Image (cartoon, rainbow, N blue to C red):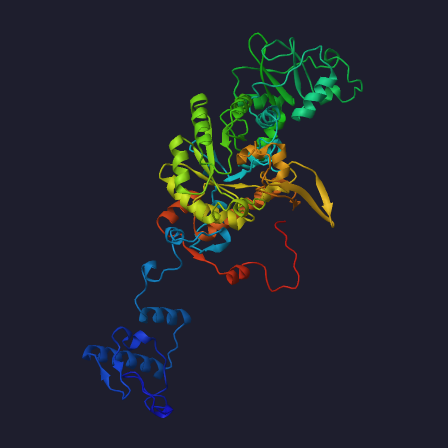
Length: 590
């Protein structure tokens, strides 16, 4: 058909028609929903008289506006266009974006965090309004859903202290002696207190060398002096840095240097009252005594400063920092657990690469019977059946992940495991029916992975390599090709196994050790007190982009299928990262 004979919809002037200038109308303005079909000969069929009259009326109105040179505003045009278009879509199901979590993870394919992307929601609040409070276990709630992994190159007392001060929690590794692990827990519990109920004390017969030993081991030097050198004995003085700094002889008896003009508070004083006494007296330490002047406790001025600097710190009912520790499933671990509980442990992780074993179930039952007030986190698991067995045994939380860590080779060596996004979603969906929180352990290398883990159903995220390069991680920095690095190794590496971690893999009696991890190095990340706030803000921005104010709303979105996912091709994954640059410098935060 030639251009001059091109057919037009009924009632519209053809191009070049003398009836007026050509005008473009929305499809519905000419009866889109009941538009007449046009045959190749231009014969209309299926229309009715009412539609034809409506079309003619619409055309006349447009022609009249053009004739009088009426030019409506842009907003009016937009409103007219919307009004003339197909009736507004009221339900997102009419044009669905992506898929819900159940549909995505319900198939036969396993997905990692990089395989998936979350689709944005509607933002109606500031990022400062986003809360990350979440459950670590049924009974322990954290301000931040961040947990440091029980690895010997990740979590000892300095890491656990920093994690708790920021609102998360650290889990002390057990690749050490019972005494050393208990000491690490004890250091955390003593680091920041309201009332220090069992401060380190000395007698007048002790020397400055004893004060220095306490300072070196526990990080503080203000020591109450009692008659017997023990708590509950009569207070006779106190030794601080001001008393000892200018004395060179470490054998000097404390009776010669201690301060005897004491400012004290009675044992019925409140923390607020005690704090006020310290402010008015300008003393760094405030001993708490009973009517007999016997020492009952101590308050440190540094605690007041830390309270202002870290208002969201994870603390127990005694205002001490929360701390966890890991143990194995062997008989000797029962003695280890007793020492940890005596040191003030808040939560125990039973640590196995494959958590669904009779050994772990028996240990869970032992802990429940012996220490009924202690929360237990079981794992690791990646299937609902594994989770079912540990939940039935009585755990208060689950640790999810197998063979997905950056230094883990379990999937390569044993051909057993599961992609982490699928593991977290499926186990979390099952555990939620019983009110058991899930910790996503492994596979996390950036804030986006943390957001995806939480979106898949995790209550908290455990991190190893992401935290290993910080100042608070064990080990010393070294340089390689001008880059400042820190050592990081998997607990399944031969190096770690030789130190004791082989019990985690049920291989301590094997003559030949089969590695399920490697040793390596990670780049310096600076102090955790700067790095963790960066992670926190990144996750908050992620939740804001999803349109959720907190993790509880995120869970509800997932349940209501409002949280939408899509799979990413390898090309889409490359597109989502840094690309098409000759060179670049990546700065995480400033």
